[in-house]
Image (tube, rainbow, N blue to C red; front, side):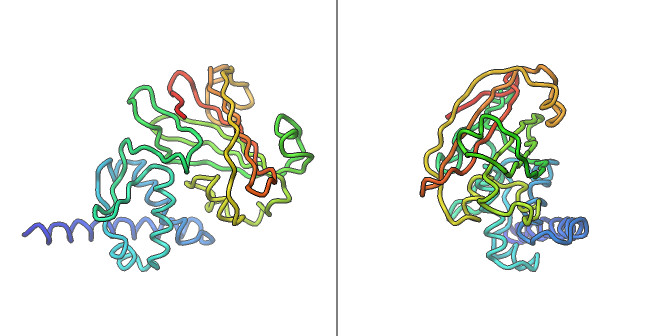
Length: 259
């Protein structure tokens, strides 16, 4: 068997695996978009080691054909994974699973590094909850009076959990009408920018250290009183409208922080 035949057979195996997992994902959540289903299936395959750093994925056109998806659906799903730093797409080099690919400053305000490996934290699993709240806090000064949309996420990867709470003015968008799977496995800031059709101004970010409360430890599967890096991020839209206030909690014993 020549090299070309070997590559084609490998692509068939990969697409066959993805097709089976897509069918399972759609059975689990029939309301899920095809883009979200493909994104989550690929994230799962990276998380469980089916796809390892450096592994190449089939060309986008081939994936679209074999999975019976529109080329734009495949491109969008891969673009969202690229935003997370999970894959690398380069013209002439195709798509491969990332190892320690740097994340662009246009995508991230900052990034966590894993102390044990010296590499950037790769988020391969997201647990998400959306609430409407009138609770007041540090976000009130930035956003004004409620009600607020609260997007609470547990972000996991490399054996590490990170907690995140994003508050947005409820008037910005009807968060309750959004399928939760659309918010899983995406860079939330850029995803919301796309939904609003607006861009974010340069954020104001503050970093401190704190001991995690019992309440937040329970929310994010972290250890009570664990020392954490606490990040506050405040953003405005380009038209001057307050966008969001976000609290992020990462265990300082396991993670470093880079800007």
